[in-house]
Length: 283
Image (cartoon, rainbow, N blue to C red; front, side, top):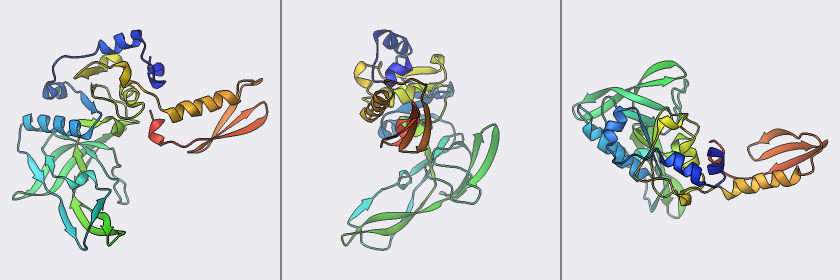
């Protein structure tokens, strides 16, 4: 079933099976308490769900504003980070780190999930946040402070570092976009259906869950128009098929680098080159 969706097809049988997981209503807080992680197409939808859940959680909500200082005129900002917006922080909140830890111990990476256990404040100012990360059966607690990030922009017609920003390196993560969970395995996932904006998004979302019983659909059912495959992957697969159509012996393959695969067919080497984002294959 997942194979046909990955190839951009949704048969009536597959549609019936998957859409049997559709749930009417959208009490996000109740579903969060049941252990569901929400997957969305857009950042705006994820932010809305996160806000609704945080608002219903018990305890004080702290809001951390980024500290931004410009040291030269800026005509246009470039590559703004997710951490350039106010961050809501509450004990018990799920978070996702959005930048790599540059320290010697590499305590977390972009995409690492954690849970807020305590918030250190000086008045209304948040100084540090205690976050627990459970990874590979090991639970670790870290006192996380603000990090400094360069702000890039156009100044006098050229790209420059126009300032610096200090903020916490994480965002709320009860809900995340599908792109951010590639490579993860979730025990329970609620896919909030919107119009897919990129190929294979629906496939990536469905393949994050280990079993159908851990999946629910919200907002609406999956439609055939939501399922589309990457033309680059289709072309890549087609090029392989055309080269091994008359194989006498089973071909062997070797990954040369991220853009090249070497296939040995009938004793001859064939290098197949392709170019697409790694995220397209990470599912």
